View (cartoon, rainbow, N blue to C red):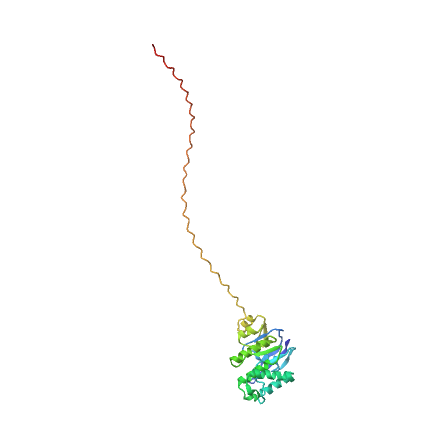
Length: 276
């Protein structure tokens, strides 16, 4: 559980106090990876620092029973006169790693960063890329319930970015993340919900696409138009030639035949006897 209790945070800029949050109370959903979105200046990075303990509120508090990382890849907290090795040891002690566990984590960061002998030189002599490598490796050396990621998903050249992505994916299989990003592809890929920061408050979207639309200024979902199936044209029917009516001539009734009277048989004539 991560809960904000009456959280107030402000900064003084140009002699004027600007409130980022004022009496904000909110309980984050459990066991989901959260995409923290908002316009520039809305307060999403401030909220992430407050959750991670990097910054403190004016009033109120962040209450949690989860282990939460510092922002992944954060290199601004290194002590410049110490070497990377000494900085890593210091962080390990803060998080309770001792003995073999401490040495294992130092070895992991050294191998991961790939900066050679510079690992034992003062951090202030590093390039920004070298500092980022050490910072990312240090973030990956610990297991947390929640990883805080502010835009930085990977750093360095193509080889190092690929290695960073692989290690981060392995971590995310065991941990949830709170990701601040303007990259919609990263939000869709890594997050289960969107938390939109605006006007000093937060709004939860369980539908990622709805959250992205709200962030982009279009809170109304667009209903996809179902394509209309084209109608097969009907073959015109050949008109039927009208049938010429047949004139029926009535049959004249047949006059019945008068039966033939039978012929009376002729009496044979008696021959005449000649006279002598």
